[in-house]
Image 1 (tube, rainbow, N blue to C red):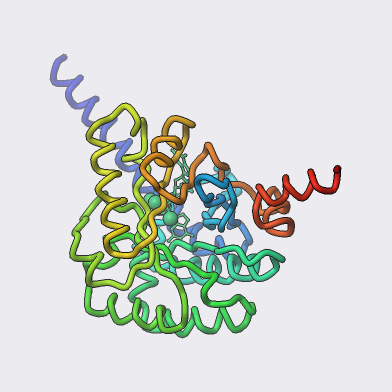
Image 2: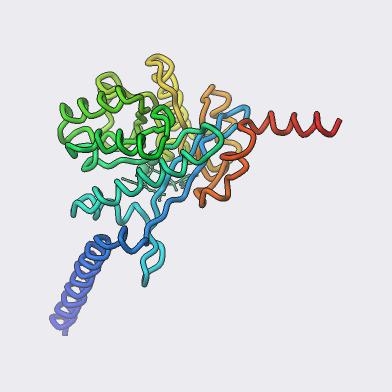
Length: 288
Ligand code: C2E
Ligand code: MG
Ligand code: MG
Ligand code: MG
């Protein structure tokens, strides 16, 4: 009997493994058509200046609405798209769509776009960015490319060359998810970053967590010392934000300041007054 149960367990295990593999194959297959079938769209999350509350830019975040399964997280499908190479077509769509959108704003806000290792190592990538800026009319200094340190390890020499060429175009470069994965301080020195994004995991309850606080303080110090601006990601509470303000962090992103949403939700920022404070002042002056 025990033997039977054992086999049964084993069979169930095999069946679920098989289901997982089928599931993944299906996603791989469906991803190949996602661009052509217009199943992808971007949502945008504001980046805010701490203190004034002014929105300085937006990060574009990819969403896939699968016809049968509904919305699938990029944390699930981007790694699959990287493995199959589908990320090249998808990433090209993302960059073009984000640049086209930002070029339509009346305010010269920044647009941050996530770029994967596969894209960064593609020999045509810099030319493609250049072409996209030209085609959409977006000024290069409004585009910020976000890459993780993981994207640098496979071929650091090639990554350095590509980042230098992007800098030469006038594009800004941010190191995403800083502090996770393969963090190495020498990356900050060797690669031409403009900005560090502190990973949200360090921001969580930072006001009550001495380890998190020490790490955030030291990254802010690094930023100051190296002349890089620092953005805190994943800010969810007012306590976290006031800790960051107290530590002179100048920029933040997170659910507290705005959840990722369709860009139409942010028309007041993209097409209105640039600084929230100034808007309020203006309204007061008009009223007076
Ligand atoms: P990321 O670039 O670090 O983006 C930040 C992630 O944190 C986003 O998840 C965002 O929705 C989420 N987030 C923002 N504020 C908060 C907060 O206050 N609390 C919490 N818990 N989360 C917050 P999302 O949109 O699911 O994206 C996950 C990751 O997928 C991104 O991490 C990025 O690595 C990747 N990704 C997203 N869009 C693209 C894309 O267009 N291309 C590539 N290559 N990767 C993308
Ligand atoms: Mg990012
Ligand atoms: Mg991040
Ligand atoms: Mg991330």
